[in-house]
Length: 267
Image 1: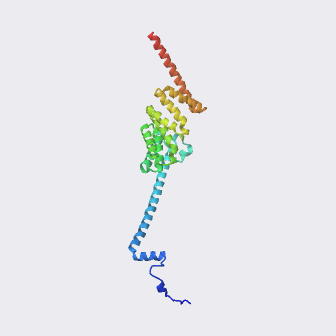
Image 2: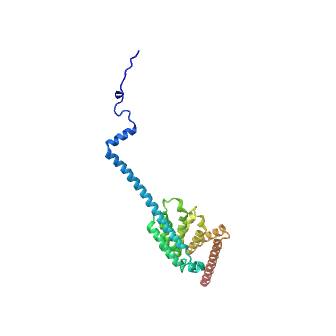
Image 3: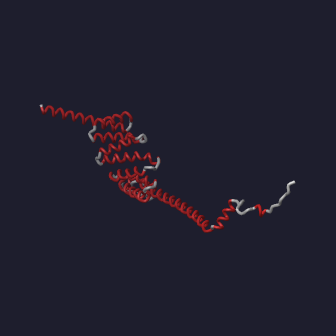
């Protein structure tokens, strides 16, 4: 029969052999206290920096939204002539003219762009600046802000995509008012070439036709005007296109009469 040998626990247990993970960690910390404290301090500092960044971002976003809302409230403020007796008695704010209201809105929107230009509120303010400058007939600043808006859209995702073609339309109208009909036609065409700008197609097609008339490209203009009449029956665009077609027809008749007169005089 085999003989039992009694071995003490001290002999069985060798140093570091069956230590748990927590035992090893505790031992490491005990032996390397300075390193451990440094790591813990670094983690705490990192968390503080992250939280501070989140807080700063939220605070800045709230400030941008507040300033943008102030700008919109200016646009919602009535003109003195539009106020009710009740509003007058309450001392509600009003503007004496649309131009005065536009100028204050431009100042507020400009402040949003200056302080928060790269944020979404800043981007939205830049778009509205383009429209406000157009309404004030400052076409250079209107085009400049619409251009800046479109450039900032790159990499922003689809949130503002619907406004991109509205900005192109605004630029086209600005160029038309300035007499740069080739540029106007170029930007009207950007709208027409897109499959995402259906809401603006009728206005862009009419604008392009008018630009082509100014450029004396009458046949191309006529094609667009006929397309409007066929595509948008019963709309204001059909009516306006009809007037342009009538104008083209009169111009051609006058041109033919002049040509006949010149031919007779030569004879």
